[in-house]
Length: 123
Image 1 (tube, rainbow, N blue to C red):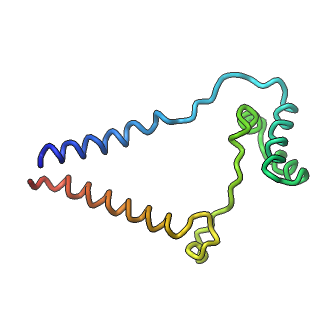
Image 2: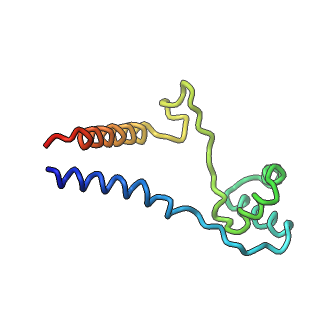
Image 3: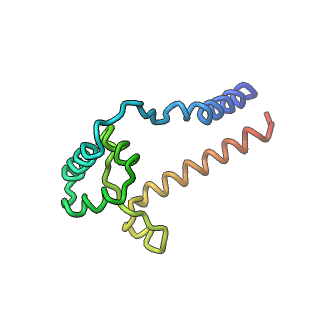
């Protein structure tokens, strides 16, 4: 039983300390001009189905660094909705579905129970 506890503790520690390895690495390649950045981001927004006037408005709200970041890899531009944490959260009007909430809560509870059991030191 002691080996199982040590193994679980080691796996949890590895899971915590290894996750920064998946961080996004931004290359040092510079773009040619801010106008080409605007064109690439505008094309990506158009592919996603956003009206050109809305796309211009969104691009005007971005800084030059943000435009360069998204133009470096246009696939970073994704459609996302606003997720409200109000009374409508469980009604299906948010991005999180009920089964995602239940599954995430269950996994969190299971993790807390396993960590509590491993920290008790009983054999």
